[in-house]
Length: 300
Image (cartoon, rainbow, N blue to C red):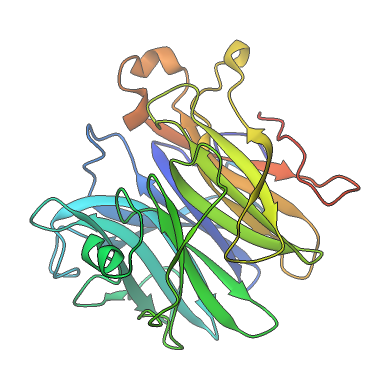
């Protein structure tokens, strides 16, 4: 496995495994102002950078497929449960405000039907007393012991909310801010390992070479988070810059982990001045130490 894993410019990746095959869902990049409008699905049977197949466009936010949106397809998250696939994505309404929507399918790579209205909006955040910059950057967490599913999201401030059983609506009274995410900008993710909640999130501006991922832990899903360290950051000597906006991926039924993220397109000089709109997707091994804490990631 070598980086980047996808040919072309993509960012903000989400990855799942289903039926023995990996599926990767990124933002389509290469557009000034992050103005792309479509999401592709990619699939592979071995994670190798030469083996990913473009399955085509699954959601177009500038089409009738998403009635409430006009563009700016950002930062998706895919979740599978009981053979159904739930694609959470960001897009802008006609008033220019970013919202989070959901589209559902019986296939990981086609047939997605979007809900008529967004799932999460700034108005909903205000109604619930939630501190929030923009309603963007969803990630999904399932509490295996109960089967409850939660959506994490946020810009400027992190938040979490429980989803209803259909995974397309919010459970009233369950939306809260998550405190303790040091230097939080966006893209919060959580996974549970050995009884501990491991939180990761992006810091800084995605246009900055110093864009990075911080890490902390908690005994509670709703926090607060105890900040630990930065685990993913640039290696300027090797022209690896702007490393962030990731997902944590665990091999099903194994203790094998990866962090899937983006970085500036390489060589970075090719996109000088526009690096934050021209990014590429990478996959790195993610390891834990003897104290159940994530080790710093060695970028490649």
